[in-house]
Length: 419
Image (cartoon, rainbow, N blue to C red; front, side, top):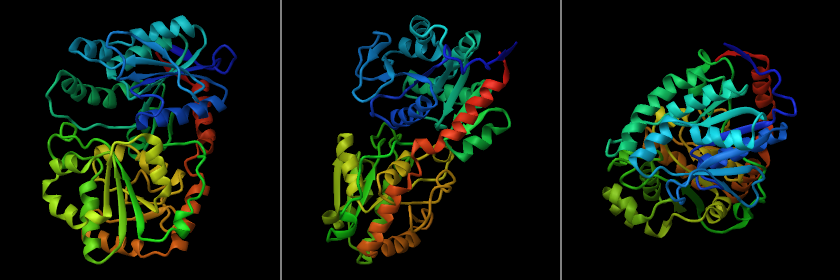
């Protein structure tokens, strides 16, 4: 059956329902991304409804309304699945979401956006959206690797990812991707597609005087998650952010006599050494230069990022890292801190060496250490100029992506799809 979305720009079709595993207000990178995209949709005249997850909620309580100071959108949250039956219900049906939309936003729905949502539930929401004259969009920001099967949820994830990525996403009316890899993969099978990196509002941060006048060595910053043994399958090779590579490079730079200070957020030293025990001697040798802060409130992490001279991270090249977009890259530049990282297709359009950061060779740590030593020898004026450029550039300001999203919506309104 053909369905026309051409009437969706009328006053009674102004609601966009975003649903997925984001944890508002800012408990994960998904929430930050969804909020920025929601501001963009708001500016285009749509009323955004956010239905996320709440790991603190009591299982079985259903979808409840949330209030988050500073967030103007209608916010709802689902409890995180706690049992096998919870998981089966969560992955197989969008029934609670459909019921909520019918109760509160009946006849006003323009589109649903499924954010990395379970395949069967996403397909359920897709079919229901079309039956109700709405567009069904998927936002695809990750291609997760296989996880070790130690629970029902792990088994479900290993089955769900290929079904969603290789089949269900290709049936959607439109896709929001986040990397050239995903855009290329879906371009031939999905007619309506828009690629968005991690976006932010223009920050309140001001250029840090530390970049120009603070005495002492260059200050480096890292923040990451997923360093618990369960997340990485008891092996450092499961790390998404290769902090071990960063510390290897810094160790070589340290041996060359380079001065630096390195603030590490998201993992404490003991947990890191549980994953990478062979780094004990290196950490000891650099003890005066390293500060492990563990998990900290987001405002504290952002302040440290703003005060740093450079943020630094390295990633292996694989389907997980190439399919996603490193939010930390966009966030760092947005808050005025240039980035040291390795070459990846997803950041190549936004990296300007000497302005937004520098590349380090993750495949040749000796060469990376040589490049890093040059960065660590930069004078304060040059570093300050880079920080000023990053802050003022507005590269990842969501407003800069209004036109492609507007064209994406316009194409949806003009098009016909098979239900």
